Length: 375
Image (cartoon, rainbow, N blue to C red; front, top):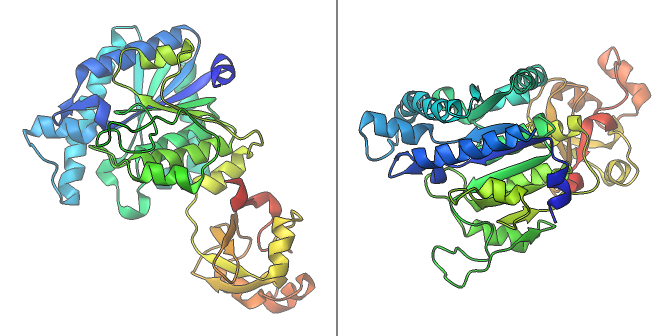
């Protein structure tokens, strides 16, 4: 049961999807007011709350008098720019009634992939929390391009949960949780109240339950759960537009689907490597290297590298895999791709003769790698 985690929670992340704070392509101010009221109540009880909210495009559509979202990217970004102001105004008005201030944070994947910017974002958020300001986070749609896109706000919420070392993630959506079928099509669909592992069956269930207004369906929530539970953080997916859903969960009522966290946590830095960074290339390694890193906890040495795929610089995140294309893990490389290509298959004492200098024995040090089995 999540009770033990709820009772010990000091910092939580709440994610609201477009599908619960919008109605007919406009903001549902009643739902926003209800959520703001619940968050304010939790804050008055001593909890720190970070809010991740969609809804900018829906608000923009209403302001511009448009019925449907445009398909062209510049127009969608412009709609988001117009709508983000209305979304924040709605939150500001609602929280102000409870004596709370809000602060807006807009992020892209670049902000979280760069370690310095990642830590800077954390410092800013911690300052807002110290000031008792509610941070309201959204993806920066107005400058979003495919290469800096976070994907969806479920993914963003998971990253923020890891970034801020939160104790619990709540994803509030328009259905009660994870079902074995889409409840909007099958009345006999059964709610899965507890998930302890991410089997293919669970992913199949989620894959058949798409989203509505938002970019993420239930499958994106499963992916978010994988991220946070690997760090020992529990997650609940529940229906957010029912009365006092958050407060009822904290009072012990069983709502939604509870994703049980792993007891063995990934360290903060390894969570960042595993769940935030996108690999810039890959290394094919031999069977001996696979055993060394997977079974013996060793670093990846040049002698175990068979092939270099892609171009990358020193310090870049790179996947390493078997000859059969099975991903073993991801790590930060000590050498750029052209140098790895030169020293692959060599013993460590041969690196200096090959490159003219040697700064590291390892291609990827074990402290900078995460095995796929752990995330």
